[in-house]
Amino acid sequence: MATPLLQEFPELSNFSREDLEDLLNDPVYFQAFFHSLDRVKYMYRAQAELGMANESIASPYAIPPFIILGLMTSSENNVALQESLYNLRAETQAAFDDAKSLEKRWKELEKEQKEVYQACPPCFRLPHFRG
Image 1 (cartoon, rainbow, N blue to C red):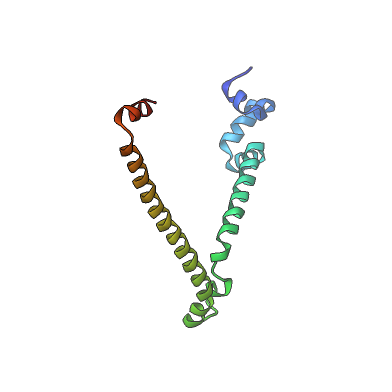
Image 2 (cartoon, one colour):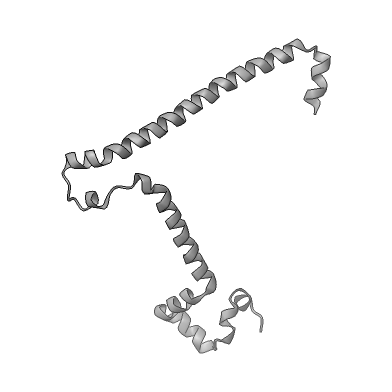
């Protein structure tokens, strides 16, 4: 019998009614069945891969483990983090400078465009605005 449940979860097609009731009533049995599903295994693999990708992105800014364990004094913490802070500050400054440069270029291009459109008679500009 092709019920919506069996269409969605064909793995249940071999289960008897008693097995299905046990699956609903026994949380350990349900968890074991749930984690054996291929789509759940795939989801956990994808989640682990995303976690590793996040860790690799964050690793240059990670706090050393000995700081987390509290084996260093506050001044030693500051010295240990100083270089990564300077690197982050330099990257931020470079990104800010790029943004300012692009903003300046944008204003120049807008000014040039305005000059070009003003130099053209209105009858020439009209067809370009209609598409």
